[in-house]
Image (tube, rainbow, N blue to C red):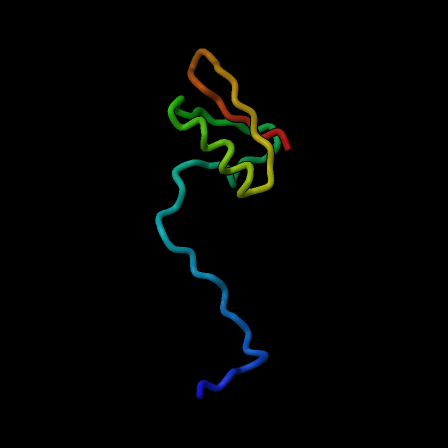
Length: 69
């Protein structure tokens, strides 16, 4: 029979994989960066992951992402 242990703290989850090349987590309110048009759907992923709000706008330089909340 396998013994069940109680009150053993779980170690923190180790981050695996490569770091993101997009600065969504580092944006402060009003900050922005340029994004490739084909990567525009990342906005929705990062909004859910970080519980923040981002807006996309076309500019002469390309597609720009702003953090708004």
